[in-house]
Image (cartoon, rainbow, N blue to C red; front, side, top):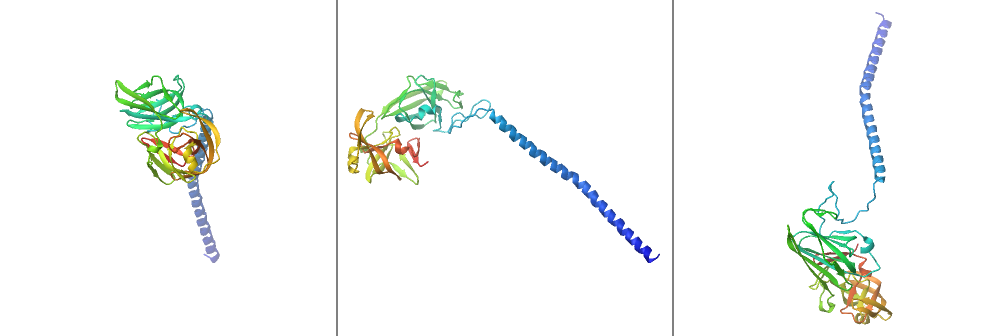
Length: 346
């Protein structure tokens, strides 16, 4: 065999080897490519399905009625039966804010003590019992205090152990109406104490009373714990809460009054605090019309909180030092549970 023939043979074998390698690579690509295609198609279809699902839910939501969520709502829907777990103690469901959140009326205190052996939900309504206004959850052995607009109310008490919702009440209990309703009067606290036991039959008794504010002079040292940005006040024997403070640097003892629209101070405190400019006003109190005067104080403090340029009402025959009203208290979050009032910055 000549050299040329041998070179030709080597080139032929190299060419065949190259073609064989290319065929194997092509075969390998032909095997891998369908898997990549399948994965890509699955991904694309998944994205498309999720997009269609989101679009479907969006258009479906447009056809649903809008319901604004209520904090601490007593109507907890957990299943097709419409029943839910019993709300925590102190939970409130504001049914008609146009009545219970009015700013053109006086407010006064309402206290409900549950000494019954089962939890209850108290529902305030209009005097005729037609329109429900506010619902409150009070667990057994607990009390609840709140401030409501003065006036007449109807009241129903839902008692039991297996809570459903406001429409049904407790599935194993009953709905009891307070005969004659209740009256919340300006300048006083309406107290209701429920007691009794049992569900079959229900033995529920009610002690109903109203109390006037105690004289602040009787409180020598307010029961308060001051913390960072919050304070806790302990209820006195007369059912009220007090905090030490100052008017223009003059020490005072405030009675916390969520039913008062404005801070009120005695004429003695006004004199000691150096209040000279005062505009005569006639105001309505629990004792009728009285002559007072309105003033603005440069500084007011209570607990660890401080305010400047505060409107106050100087009351000539006011017992005690001062009442801390809603023109200051509205700036805070106020919670009452048991015999403790918590005041904290929002």
